[in-house]
Amino acid sequence: MSDVQIALLILGLTIVLFMIIFNWLQLKKTREKQKKADSMRRQHDPLFDKNFDNPSELDNFIVHEPSNHNVSMDFLKKHLPGEINLNFESVVSLTLYKTSEARVLLDLDITSYLRDLKISLYLRKDDDLWATGEAIDENYVFDQILLSLPLISRRLDVDELVKQKFLDLIEKIKQHLEVNQIWLSNEDIIESTAELMPFKRLINKNFLIKIQPKTDSSFHFGAFQDFFNKANIRLFKNYHWYFDPKVDGQKMFKIMNLNRQPLKIDSDAFIQGIIVSLDIPSTNNCIDAFDEMTNLMNEFCIKLNAVMVDGRNKEIDSVYVASIKNHMNQIVKEMEKHNLIPGSEQAQKYFA
Image (tube, rainbow, N blue to C red; front, side, top):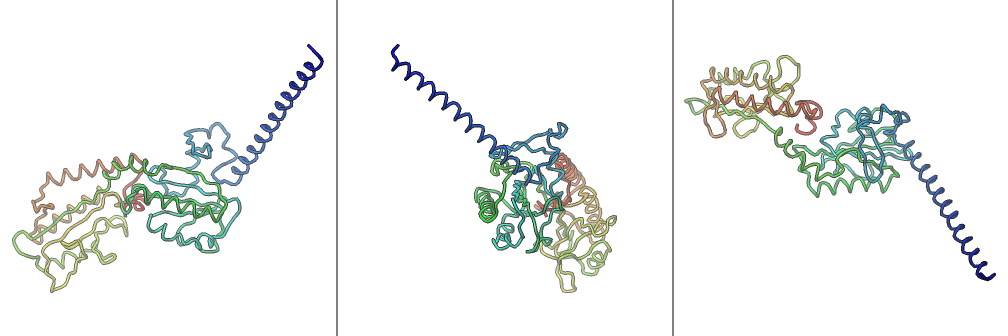
């Protein structure tokens, strides 16, 4: 081998060795930079805790792309507002790198998003209690935002348009505030909504009983008025409600005219019938409420010579009532299985 060949071989080996060392240094630098960035994100996000590395905390992981942060589900449940149910809502956390005043959000004119999409907005600073609604004024200082879109709301049909508006709201906030975004539940909004639809259809029930005179064309005013003077029947927002005799201020079922409008009880009224309505998911102790309703309506029928009928004006008998109660029991059990209690704050948020 000539001197020239030896020199070229040494030069080639030197270049290869140099490239190996250079690439190794670049990789080390990149890893250190990423490690520092991850550390900063965790320091700024109240959902991450220094005790998270404790093996006892490492249960029930969920992974949220694209951040790839592992978050303990138990930890999240302990630090989220009590009225949020991760099973039935699409929830995103936006954690600021520095505190801000709520006026920044209010100036973005996000009210229409919150109203039209039934979105819940929560703010807090550090480990303070979450603030929402009227508790937030323009001077409120915060460093974390929670946005929650209900997927089973009676007042909202979640579709691609709703999904896009929700994402637009998130991006609108991110354009004005430097945040770290983490999806806490149901990031795939459309797929999650489709999976929840059978459950929503099962529990979204409002039971109605129609009562009409058995022989006359209308109820006699005197007897009708006397019956509605009962202590537990009171006006609330123009409608007559039957209130729970055991729990002060707790509504059980609503009483309306045949057009489902407020009853007008006066001497000139020509009342041909009434409708009694019990909303299953939004009523506390709805089985007890159903029993109270059937007992009261039986009493009404006796005193005013009336009859209970279904939507086809077919008389309701005890077998029909028993079947309805059995169906209600099934609905309640299914709700409780999903940790959604009829009449609870969560159920009210979705169905009231």
